[in-house]
Structure formats: C-alpha cells, structure tokens
Length: 613
Image (cartoon, rainbow, N blue to C red; front, side, top):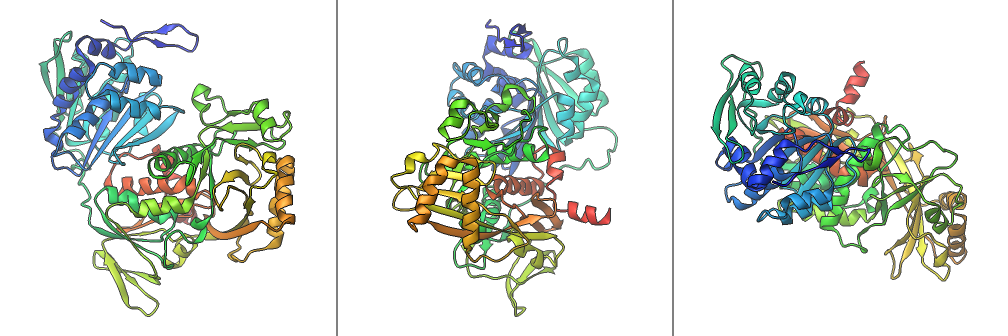
C-alpha cells in the first residue's frame, strides 16, 4: 500500500489522510465510484437534470472530483452543468494531483487540466472552469466550519470525506454534520467511507436515513444516506431548478456580453440589445487594458474580490483569445511610490498573485532598485473588444444593435422593453441591465451611478523601443509596453480618472498628464513617449466608465426577473466575468464563485440598505 504523505511548514511529515491511503490500495477511481458516486446514486440520479450540485467536505487529492467529472463526460444523460464545491484546509501540490491520477484510466488528462490551474490557493473560494464552463469546481480553502458557513446553495449530493475521524474529529463532529445538513434539501444523497458508530447516530439525529453498504477492500463497509427527516423543517422544500428560457440583456459591452455568455451556457436563449450598431463600444472599446490583481498590505475586500475576478478572466482569455494578438499573460510590476508596507502574511499561496519585486525586475523596467515595488504573476493585457466578441459568439447568444431601450415596464410575470415613443421593442421573463451609466435611467434612478471619464495615450514602437520595460507597469496609471495596435507593436499608457465627467472628447492636457505619470514612474520609458509626441505619432482614446458610490460593482436581482450587472468602474476586465457568474449562480441556486460575505459586498441591493440605514 502506497503511503500518501503531506508535509508541514517545518518540513516534518504530517499524518497521511486515511481515505487517501485506503483508496490507493484498491484504486482511487474504483473507491470514488463505489463509495461516493454509487453511494449517491450517480449517474442515474442526475439524468436529465439541468444542474447537479455536489458538496464535498475534503478535497484531498481530488480523486472524487475527477471521478465525478469523468462520469459526467461519459454519460449522455448528464446534466447541463455540473457543480462541485469542495473544502480543503491544506491543498496538496499540483504534482500530487498528477501522481494520484497517473494509474487511473481516463483521469490523467483531467488531472492535467486541473493541475495547470492549481496555484495561488489563498484562503477563500477559488473557481475553476472546465468543459467550456459546464463543469465548475469551487475550491474552498480553509477549515471546514467557516467554509461551510460561507456556502449558500442546496446540494444534490454530499461527499462526506476527509481525514480519519480519529485524526481530525472536528470534520466529523455533530456541529459539522448540522452545517452540512443546512445546505441540503429533502432527498439529498450522501456517501462516505466512514462507518463510525457516532457518525451514524449523528447523521440520524440530523434527519438522515442511513444505509450501511458493502465496501471495497481494504474497507469492509461504507455508508449511504438520504436526507429525509421525520419532522417538518421550515424552508426544506427541494430547490427548484430555474428553467432556462428567452431573456434579454441590455448592454453590449464587457458586462453585458459576460452575462449573456454565462446564461447561454446554462441553456438560455439570449438577445443582447445595445444602442450602438456594433458590440464593444463605449468603455469596452479601449484598445488594450490591464488585468492585474489589486493587492493591499491588509488584504482588504477589494484585494480578495480582485483575485477572484482575475482568476476567472484569465481562464476565459486563455480559452477564447489568441495569445499575443488579443491578450498575453505577461506579469505586471507595481510601482508602490513611498509605500513600504509589506505584503500580507498569506504564505506561499500568495506568491503567484503578489510578491516583492526583485532588483533585476526593477532594473529591467528602468526603475531605481531601491524603489518599493511588487510583482504580480497572474496579470497581463487584454483587448476588451476581442473578449466581448468571443462571449457574444457563444451558442444561444444573438447581438441586436441599434436598439435603444428607453423604459423597462412590468408586464404580467415578465418585463416589456419600450422605446422613446412608448412602443414595445421586446418582452421577456428575465431582463439583465448591464448598460453602464445608462443603467440608472433605465431603472428609474434606483441605482446611484457616477460617470468616470478616462483617456489613454498610445504610439508605435520606434528606434527607441529598447527604452521601454519588458512587461507592463502599474501603480500610477498603467504602462503597456508592447501590444499589437498598429501595423507594428505599440505602447499604451493612462488612464486619466475624471469623476463625474461624461465628456468623451479628446483632450491634449490629458495626454500631458499621462506623460507626466510615465516620467515619475518610468523615466527611461518617458524618453520614448516624448519622442513619439514630438514626432506627432501618438494617438488618444477616451471613454466613460461607470462607478457606484462605493466603487464596487453592482450585481444581483432588483425585482423578480429584473437583474443588474453594472458599475465595473475602471476594472471591467477584472469584474465583468465574475459578476456574470455571480448573477447566474444566484439565479439558478448554484454554489457561488465567492464566499457569501464577499458576494454580499457586490449585491445590488446594498444601495437600498445603505439608504434605509
């Protein structure tokens, strides 16, 4: 029997997971299928379902997830979307994921996909997307009790897994079982390898009907259970799947296109209405934008939200866009000015997101090596319009340009869209408003939104291109040294940030302000920018972004059938896809891509609460 060893921070071996050991004796795939899949009645139980939601209490080496994903792939009656929400306090290394699947037929290719994204696992939720967004893993890094409190969905199946109860009794305690049960509906199935007497008794006390089944060697027995309490529990009715139908998204920029693609993956037929004739006008027409996490020394709310958003957008870019033409993951150097505060103490998991920049990196950028700076691996540049076009090409999405909606009116159980003359343009049971600063007028000014004008300056590479840094730099605006904007590579810098300014006309003084920021942060690169200005080779672009009063996006349901995803501010690339997935998850009762308390910080109704408070 192969021993699976984990290591503590001091280099000493930690007690191996009992379940991983016994699975290695018979075979991980066989154990996962017998104990967990068959124990929960899968695949028969999910046949024909729109969604299937699994809650797992211990991810370990990921064998249960990989086995469930494989079963989903092999089943012609599979649900449209498979959700797998799993908790793990101590994520293993990517190499361990590969080793555990190496001898299991069919699992290794899936493990390789997972391992390629298995990094930056800071405490909290991490969303991984596979199979064109139809297999969604939400890895919850942390102790089981707080991670269960952050869940807000009803599971169809529970995989009760983790360390041996003798080694980690908290994972199998009555409190944990009560927290798991809170996330279940009547009929939820449960599978586990443990047959401990106290576990059986505690499950029964929580309302589970427990069945002891034959196990696979070396385990003699395992358990299956079904949640069916003999007493009435308030609000216990089975979660009803939202039946996808026709819907309308208002806004053809980053926010609207992202929502359209997320809903289409779940079976909706989506029409995207936009005032302009084509998609990605307005702020989404920026020639190229920077995607980078916001990191603060205290790891504040924006830092945690931005990591979640950047992870999702990077996955979307990698799957959809042409590397080097429409996007590139380059890493980003962040200039810190006079702020010498250290990074938060989150251990090695933070390093792929943010770490102290090396002297070599600062010298390469033309920066003083003594200057405080951070380096972000998970960062790069993206052409926003390319991402918008890709989302709008998703099956089930149709862009309808030249459609200016003036009013949204309740019509029976749905909504009617009217033009300025009061004529009906369309009707739908579901409408999502993602129209940037125009969203407020469409919603009778129920939202407090502020325009934010921004202008960037850009120019072609010339003989002085060697003065430019080899990677993007941000911290006082941003500087992208190499993007394919013209017949040759170009640099782009900005942006200005004009609060309350909705005038898109180009301004010479804004170009001067962009240059001044470059001079302060990158004096060497400023020479190339000044040369292009003198040769009159530079061009400018301006657009108006939309921000909320607290500068966080607004995403969620205003009224039944009327949803919002807007106010991305200057971080549309960071937040558009995250907010789209949050809207879809709320609508369909899925596991959220964020901890519940972080999702609450983006909820559109917080403005109502703030006014009433």
